[in-house]
Length: 266
Ligand SMILES: NC(=O)c1ccc[n+]([C@@H]2O[C@H](COP(=O)([O-])OP(=O)(O)OC[C@H]3O[C@@H](n4cnc5c(N)ncnc54)[C@H](OP(=O)(O)O)[C@@H]3O)[C@@H](O)[C@H]2O)c1
Image (cartoon, rainbow, N blue to C red; front, side, top):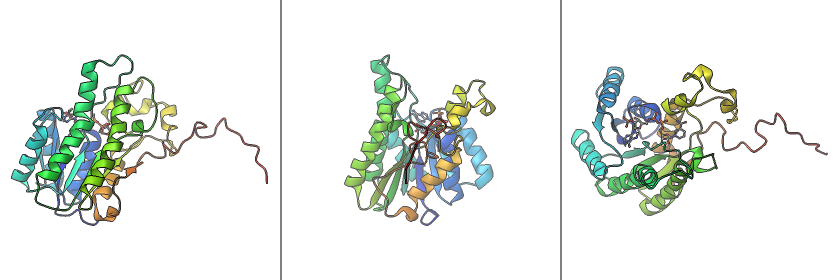
């Protein structure tokens, strides 16, 4: 993809799952990446594996996105290691799934480590650099678009991401593009935990059929859509929510049409 090689990126939550696939893809494209995660051991191990595969183009720092000082800490670190970043990927997000039972603490955690952390990172990115151009991708979700059972916290917080990127795209234009991406059900630890036998083989058929493509998604598929949005190939795209969801959001209440019929006429 055009405009990635030689650039510098910060990725939040890059030690596992979608974030890790994004770090790998960017590294592969010749981007130097600083990524974070709360668990220092898991992050350092991910870094070692990456370095073995791609060489010295990635760095890790242990940090919690809910902490007040994390945005400043991440940007100070990336400048120290690689220089001023060109890209930001806001990926880490709490999976707090609570409904009417959500406590005050659940709401504070979901929003402060979720959309508020995304917003604080965008602001820090915009003010902490002298570079003019830049691109930002925030990982949102199909959950920001639809109702799901007992998921007030997660879905409300993902819905907030959609509005955040529009406002940020407006204020930071024309130099910095700000977009988000809405994946469907992706094969990561969180989804694996929910399978009946904690294995991909036990993935219910119904989950696959939530998607037009009738399968769960791979983290690498979200990583390629992210790389595209950061690249110069997406130079006309800003304030946009890319549905990288294998057709989840295109599906209507009739699902795959197994029980639907339509008389039709000429
Ligand atoms: N999986 C899906 O089906 C799916 C679908 C739609 C959208 N998404 C979105 O995609 C993004 C990634 O999801 P995922 O499934 O890849 O998650 P994951 O497998 O649980 O990985 C999350 C990554 O973020 C880090 N992280 C989590 N909370 C953090 C915090 N407070 N501060 C710093 N790092 C943190 C984790 O490391 P530590 O645990 O060490 O902190 C890990 O590296 C999220 O925004 C999620 O909402 C996922």
